[in-house]
Image (tube, rainbow, N blue to C red; front, side, top):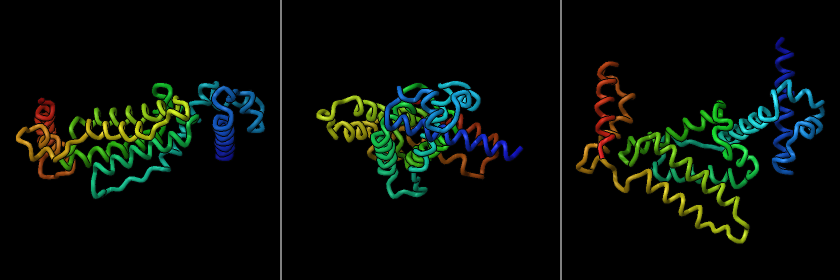
Length: 234
């Protein structure tokens, strides 16, 4: 049985690699079940047995893309400057998109494609670690979920807009300006704990709350609710 599972997984990987290669070389329209099967050295019905249909195959290619993107990420657990670390992560995401345009368009051109994959979820954890460090430093301007959405939206928008432009209209200022707009929207110039209002301090404490051991679970939960209410004040 283990041999059968291994053989099936090897066949899946061969098909995904063939589909990804066709996608890169000839574009998405070239990724047909017949062409992929030929490139992988198997019959077309095998594609359906392995992936269900063409959309299932494209989902697997997107998941493979997230795995490749995850492999390119490097998360510094203790960066000197969490804001510069945020910039570096954003730049890496954009650089991946520009280097892999067809794959990126498949991964991010349709809502939620591949987002259930383990690699995508691991990448999200890296992003939230960056956001957590901003919050713990008192530098997070908005809630963590909104920060993640803003970071994703600006990086995705920057790449897809860049790829949609003719070569003579691709101004690098587009990328740097969108990155700095994201930084301004997500972070504060100075730690919020220095400000008179309670929201920034509450946000910083909320980020560190799971790491402390002085309070019971019930006390943590109650304090968390209070901090969430303070954080929501405008």
